Amino acid sequence: MAEVVVAGPASEAGKQAFPVLAGYIFGKNKGEQKLEMTAPVTQTAVPVKLEMTAPVTQSATTGGFLVQFVLPAGVTMANAPQPLDERVRLRAVLPTQVAVIRYSGFWSESNDSEQLLKLQTALRAASLSWTGEPVYSRYDPPFKPWFLRRNEIWLTVPEPQ
Image (tube, rainbow, N blue to C red; front, side, top):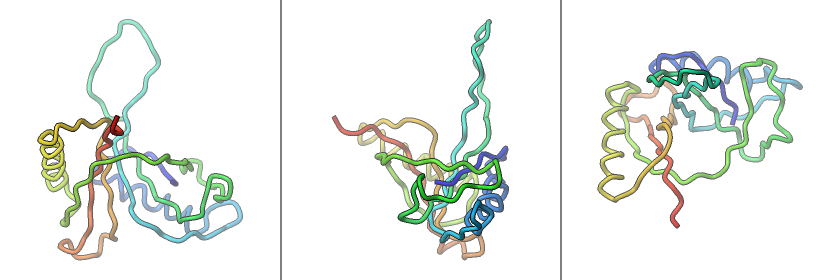
């Protein structure tokens, strides 16, 4: 994955991250190597990690949004071109089991929230749990008609015992 963390809000995170990540795959890297555009583009909230201090308090906060491009098959950490933009990080992602809901429509907070609730309801009905933040996956460019767009939400589920 090539990834970048942006401040958001969620509805703007993809727009903020796209030029940075697209620059990387279109040649703004050491060696000016161009990589194929792939899908999906994923987005998830990043929790804030703070150093331990006293007193310990707890409050809800958002550290930003992690937006990722899946790199083409055959690109590994060993052969991926190094980014010139320090905001772009490369990361190997291990296989993970996820529950997925697929839907079409606009990329909106209301549409995403509705679909996330459907996925969580289905998991509860199946007595399955999940961990972490939802990952919002987009497969199509923003100019594709809303009714033809492929969107997904992924929730990480524990491996069966």
